[in-house]
Length: 222
Image 1: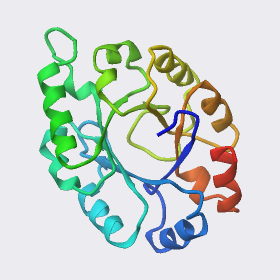
Image 2: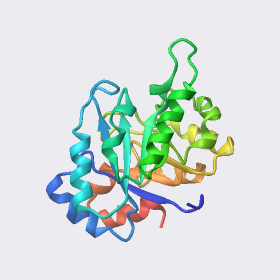
Image 3: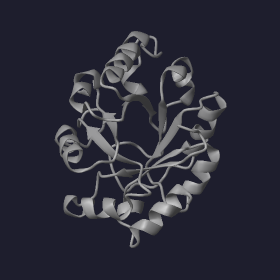
């Protein structure tokens, strides 16, 4: 995927399921991915039935699926997401408690498992996690997800300092996808794209907009 191309990823977390298909059809030529949040109630306070949600969306929608695992033990659940285009796990789940460094064995096992399903590998960082942690693994992933809010809830406002993380990841020489998720609006998406984000996750600002199509075009920068 070219770095200068921007991909719009629709988050279905807080969308009324009855309205979802109609809204997706309305922007089918603009929307690139559907974003599915999987929460276990442990890694984040909230909980979603992510596996069932994934199965339902896979049955009824044709857009590629971008799965975000907000779970303490991603290895336990990855096999449920065969058919996803991208599977992202949090770097915080593979930190060695003793050394506070990334457990490379865990990381490699997760990468191998995701690749075995034919999916791209993503790694996510929370707002207060330093992006420098990614240096030793960044060459082995396809996507870095910079959380621009604390993960676990939809409808939050973007945390300003997280924007710097996008630019810093690019400065590490990463040429893959930098995804941003949380509090994305038609206003702040332009700055995030300028800093190097090329995959924009939008939920509230997209699917709850008065004009979904206009919002999609603005968020994507078209």
